[in-house]
Length: 334
Image (cartoon, rainbow, N blue to C red; front, side, top):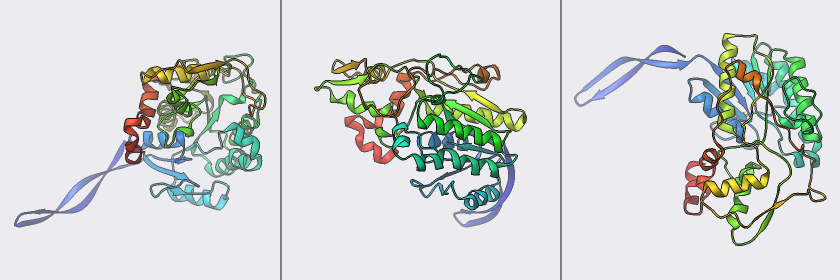
């Protein structure tokens, strides 16, 4: 929806100049997206902006000219952005989402994953706030997990995101928590996602390499998550009772080895050099849940879910610029 305004414009024609009043459509719905420079944040920002929302994206280390640089740990800065822009919706995507990094740099990760939530939730007030959380709040021993199942995170990343959930709901009880699994989508570099990072192993071709074949994952396309966020935001503007915990996940179940094979198949590449590794090596980093499958019926019952994009379709959409004959396009489109 938009508001129709009038704007004076000068129209030039050969031998003639006239001043005319043109219609200008301004989106009346405003959304603030934190972490808009990240993997999910970019998709969320695009989804809202392309569907008639006045969208403001903020980032920090990777903030670009089209995004606002904002330190989410600075209460005055956060307050200034919210009071200045006055969003109807905030989608909080900013996080340290790499479990091994959280283990190594715990204090910085806790600041972003917990303390920034506190600041944002306090300043949000009555604004509808969507907080992006993770399936890693569960231990993976008894899937699938519903929204009301008791969390039991195995690693510091899961613990930090669970604590972030609690801070959000404590200071902003009208907020929504959206838990999602491992994500992939349009990347600036393949290392940006634990899914697309397997691309280089697929391309190795001549040399065999082992890939983990133990933990079950449900790789989910960022564009699908972004559509869910917009569905939730638009419903919340009509129905303020929308709040609490929600789950969204793709349904295709794969280990990392199976993900790599599916990537190879999607691009008609060989996969015979990929070797499944059925035991976790010692010192493999932060402990991961074996199978943290999310049960997503709440979104589905409310008509807010979306049909997940088939993995092979989505991975082609994500990785096509990184094919050897198209790598020049990375600088053009990414």
